[in-house]
Amino acid sequence: MQHRFVSTPLLRIRDAALVIALSLLIAPASAQTAAPSLFPSLNRPALLDSPASDTLAVQEIQGAPQLPVSIDLTIRENNLWDRIRNGFAMTDLNDDLVLYYQQWYQNRPDALRRMVERSRPYLYHIVEELEARGMPTELALLPMVESSFNPNAYSRAHASGLWQFIPSTGKRFNLEQNWWRDERRDIVASTNAALDYLQSIYDMHGDWHLALASYNWGEGAVKRAITKNEARGLPTDYPSLNMPNETRHYVPKLQALKNIFGNPGLIARLGLPFIPNEPYFATLETPRPIDVKTAAQLANMSVEEFQRLNPSHNRPIIKPDTPVVIPADKVDDFRSKLHDARVPLTQWQAYTVTSAERLDQIAARFNTTAAELARVNGLSEKVRLGAGSTLLVPGNGSSSGLTSLLNAEAPQHIIEPERVARTCGKGSKRGGKCASHDESPAHKGSKSAKESARASTAQANRAAAARPDTKGGKGTAKTTVKPSPVKPAASQPASKKRK
Image (tube, rainbow, N blue to C red; front, side, top):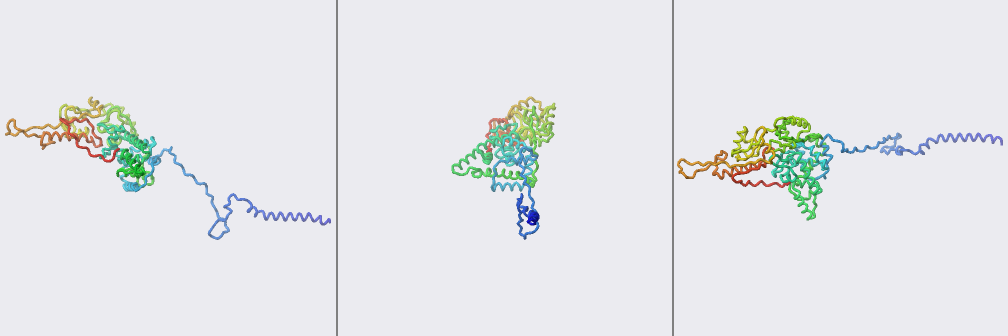
């Protein structure tokens, strides 16, 4: 019995040792299978087309993808094209005409580059005005369609300026049109009027494509076309209306330009000029009358450069208190020189005709040419002016008559017919009929005094209706024809464009 009790503790020690040894062998295997993995996919064999390999496949865990950076519209862009692109808000138009005009513009990169260069002085101001009104910046490209950014553009329908206003619509939007200036060509005034007009017709239709069609064709015409489609149960959007070809092609041209300038890569490929996102010009008023040539000299500009910024003036004199547009980097220098000037700023004066005389006779008196006087005053070179007529002639600007002329909307031009001389042959009897002929060399061969007078007055009327100079202005001076006015020829029919 004692032997049995002694062996029992030894057996227990043996059994414990066996259990410990066995647990040490089993623990690593159970740890691999029992512990849950944080990345189960790492414990799974890779799915390979090749037979299973003894080596473990290495898998790289990718980081979280970066979210795209949003456009911060409060950051000022250096490139004006980027600013315009960020303000696009019109519905895109996609049709064959858009593709046609986009290809047309892209096939003429030189013409497109010239048009962009012409837009450089004006584009920033237009974009500023559009953004201030909350209007789509696509409209900044509209003068490319209207006038190719030529402020002196003049159409057969008598539309003028960057935005191509006809006289009646210009008056409706308070654009001054008189002997001195035509605000349809003024950069600031015409832009304000155009955007006012576009906003009003957008408010009428609630659709920018219809507003553009109205700008080209007339809001009344578009409204009638919409009414016709409504009566027939047809859609009333822009592509569905029946309209003239000019209006049908109008919006696709603008959309084609939007597609080009909305694509930075295409702009670079076509080599279109960079336009900085900064003001090009500023405006100020002059308290005294000043010649266009003198203003250009004070601004250190050529006359051509000055007139590109100030194309509205019909005469060589700028009236007092008229806004003058000067490059932004030259405004301070211009203002300083203007303040320090102690001599008259104009070399023109007013001259009143005391007895009937031809323009070439007046020109000789003031050491100039009839062509120059005709251009400055908007007259024909062959015209004969009656007593009381007022002209701008070269002078020192000190004439008191100039002040009264500047205060008038237009001078008075009284057109006199040419005098007719009567000659008789040597053998004619007293009281016999004598032949009549015109003394003016311009009318040699006239058959009678009546025909001579009619030809002179008709020529004067044509001159009064003509533009005064090469800048596209139309003279509106008060012209009186003696002894009786001749009915002017009927004006040419206006095109379908009714802005």
